[in-house]
Length: 270
Image (cartoon, rainbow, N blue to C red; front, side, top):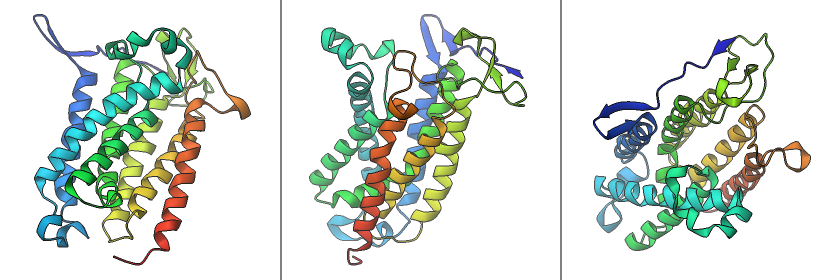
């Protein structure tokens, strides 16, 4: 049985300025996106596009900027809508209090989709081409976010067997019983494993939309599995069929991923 190591959330304190580990994980996520995005330019079909439709480093920078906006706005609105709609309906001004915490991946995903649609229309490019470009560059950012969750000692897992070698006690959970370190599970599944599979899949030219479909399906499946080990939100608990809110939100992703992949498979090769 392991004990949560009580990591100081502040990485560096300079006078009144405090640099938090969680903020650094976000910076790492953005840096990894730029690094992978510039290498994605070498993959088919992006490397062969010429003329006005050619992809450049400037496109990667613009997508990153719009994506950050989509993550923040969508993630916050998604949390308010999916997890606490009643509370924020009666306290609408607290929607803007993002420093109090409360972000939703699924809301952030919708925000990123909206930002990609904006980018595609402004550059007169197919939206699915933009989605295919972005999808393999996302999982490493998700992995960085899970590192931040672990450092903050939040989003811990459900109770685990005392015999589990990596079972971990999170005193901040209010219990001294071992739990699954679900942040680590999500780091490995939604982050590293999804990245490796998606990056290898995207290296070969696919029908337009299939890489984005693989991301939707892959993330949905891995997150659905990880949710079996993650403690559900205390104010929600388990929902119908014994599933968490995260699992219910993953089901549309899985269905959409399968439907998009099958639709793309029937389209002629561009």
